[in-house]
Amino acid sequence: MEYNVEKECSLFSFLEKKGFSKKQSKQHLKNKEILVNKKVRTAYDFCLKEKDKVDIIKRIDKEIPLLYEDEYILVVDKPYQMLTIADAKTRENTLYFKVSSYVKQKGKQNKIYIVHRLDYDTAGLLLFAKSEKVKEILQKNWAKTKREYKALVHGKVKKEDTLKFYLKENEAGFVFVSRKNASTKEAITKYSCQKFKNNISFVTITIETGRKHQIRVSFKEIGHPILGDKKYGIKDNYKHLYLYASSLTLKHPVTGVELHFEKGIPSDFEK
Image 1 (spheres, rainbow, N blue to C red):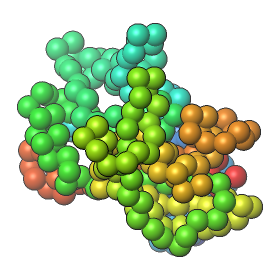
Image 2 (cartoon, helix red, strand yellow):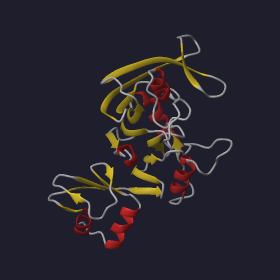
Image 3 (tube, rainbow, N blue to C red):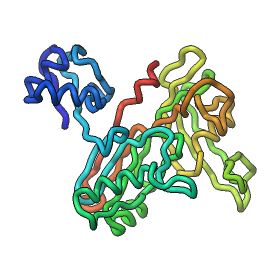
């Protein structure tokens, strides 16, 4: 639910004018469900300015914001350090399990289907289908879906560049750059540098191919690994990978209407 700010006021008074009780407002702030210009705000006295946009989001649970839902699809914001789908060791603490439990609350027959995945260490927007037919339509047209990422990388990168590498995966699941041959897959990654400070570059990334660990391996290869990358990076003190899937643009699988979903970068990016 999005609101436009018409004149300067505090966030708390704005919510009150929109019909939210003090209890509701405090709960939304506590649960980090209020975005101002795509950034989470938790201070009740935060000053809103004219033309600001205030979003109030729903959640699957306390960890997972729900950005969009209709009878065919839903879009959630995956947390860091959570599997998209179960592996041999983890069954319930996965995004799939949590979203599936959410839709089954509305009807035991309800199901969800995986359209694409994000790495365990990567956070951001993830799309689910509510039927196998819808999943097949989305995957068939996935090459036309536009995905954008934000990342913090070590060192100063070029203002913009296109990275083209051929990737190969070994038996241990480690991906590395190799020469072009029948066993490698081409990976194309474009980026632009938005800001450089304290020997860290803030970059916006788009991908033309969807290879496993593509972004992480590509930035490692040019000598600018992502902050907090324990697998492909350098030893640093960051607790998680600073890679965030920030937007999705696609055609609705049933109506054909173009949909655009975008979320501001996590607050710890700014810190």
